[in-house]
Amino acid sequence: MFARKETQKDVVVPKKSGEPLGIVVVESGWGSMLPTVVLAHMNPAGPAARSNQLNIGDQIININGISLVGLPLSAAQSNIKNVKTATAVRLTVVSTPPVVEVRIRRPDTKYQLGFSVQNGVICSLLRGGIAERGGIRVGHRIIEINNQSVVAVAHDRIVNMLATAIGEIHMKTMPTSMFRLLTGQDTPQYI
Image 1 (cartoon, rainbow, N blue to C red):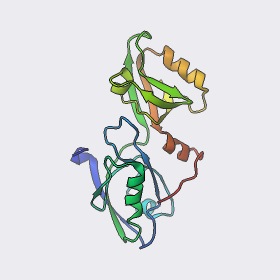
Image 2: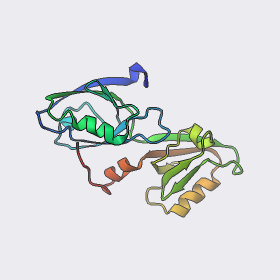
Image 3: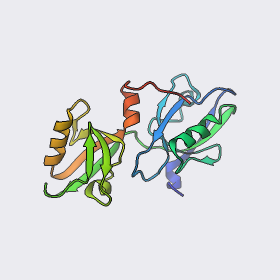
């Protein structure tokens, strides 16, 4: 099993035949413990939101008996679209917050953090490095470093904050595509 049974929940979403679920899913990010899609947005008038059983950040591991674990994003989206004719959809989800909290221990600046960042987005990760062990994921947007928001902070400043940080470094990240949806930078394409 990819997730402990006690962290999973089965949800049945009632809907009309032909009605889409009204969700947007994104990839969980390279390095995620559970390689599946994450619920990034819900149409407030759609069946998923109306059911009051799902939350932004939920990892969808199964839909109507079909596992989404390990599938490419496009294949997972196709499986979700394929339930359009159903009048009820059974989802197995692992509830997780949309924001990932990361703690990295760095005793001194002579030790590299082991990741690169471009405009606040983690674009590469050194295998086995401090950052990977701390839970950093490629494709995630850094939203906070040591309790300081970096959402509207210039790239050079973020790099400097990371380059000079020592001790226990606290970061909050989320999938970039989810960040863009939640901040209105992208328009949701519901499925």
